[in-house]
Image (cartoon, rainbow over the protein chains, first blue to last red):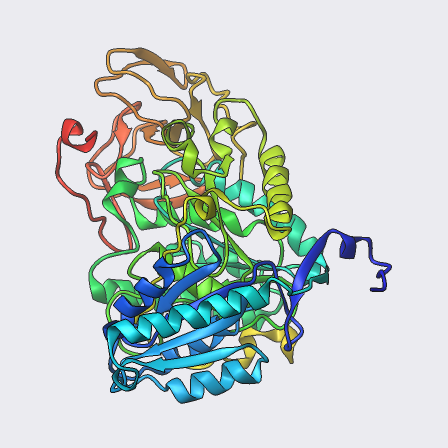
Length: 408
Length: 113
């Protein structure tokens, strides 16, 4: 294999995929296409404890373009090596289209339909056998050099408190600034937690048209949540000292760092270039299917659908979340929480408050950890077997041209 | 925006309080402050009646009813009643200017379980 001249190329290695992207993991995914097939999927995956076999799925029986698109993106994510689809047989999900798309990506794919496969037991047996074969085959998978500018990193915050905006989020912001400078793609969210930050955020847009779109995306979120009667704010946020959604927003906004904002994407969109992108997670049109993201893992899943190889998760109260498909690095903003939940936390950012580290030092630590995790080191949540996954109903309009000025 | 390492309030306030922006009318506790303590807030001694937990806010000056509460140099809501210097600033005396804040009514003892 020829060595590339770029020194960064020697730093990472990835599994090459047919679309040119590279994976930092090589996971076999088992995907149920309606809740009725969930149990069979869970039983199959339970036969591979400790192995890279993850369960994802969509519970609904009604068709939904967003969910179909998300499943396509997730099943062809660079961290995925093979895909088993589980159908009951009568659901609305288009398994034929999904299977064709996965096959076209040069990944092994099989569909088992419980109604045509002799029911629960024989489907579990056949699925287990297929997954076992794929795991064996993936052992021979080769990796190739991967540059830092091929890496896609998302950031989400959850279980926030009054420390999140002081330590964890700005430290992630420092790491993001350096990743963006190195050409990587960084994605932050979520518009419902940027309420009150729209003007300072718009000032960072690379074009005036994008600035207008950034303001509009936050206004859409404010309208959406006002209709629902609740902001993106949980009682634990208040226990931790946050009094209002705009206070929480100011803290959440800090994780975007200080780079120029290159564009807005929606869940499942792949950013066209490196740079910093806002993910607009709030559905378009009238309020239809309820809360935009019912909990933190739904946001992580959307980050992954947009190609994130790993997600930085900042918490103050103490989230223990992980995710299927892509590793989650947990950055703990609160030193008291870190002492209580050290076994779940990858980074102790709260020590900044106690004078034991600076934001830059923790930012560097996060960056170093990103590189290690990209090279295969497991995060705390991976070690603990956290593989949460949520996908629900939404509806989006395609992104407008002003949202991605660099793609034109 | 000031960072925690340079935000220690140098306006005559207790070292456990952070001033995130000169425009702010609240200070943030970077360490807990216990009920019963008398601490300095902008040089004025203030008796702390209830524990101030990590990450919570106290008033850096008197704040009038309906006045904007400012943190990070930005408005984070409005006072729902007059707030005294050194008083805990939270959901009981301020509100969002966007959507209401949802809290669960429970005692501190219940919440510690």
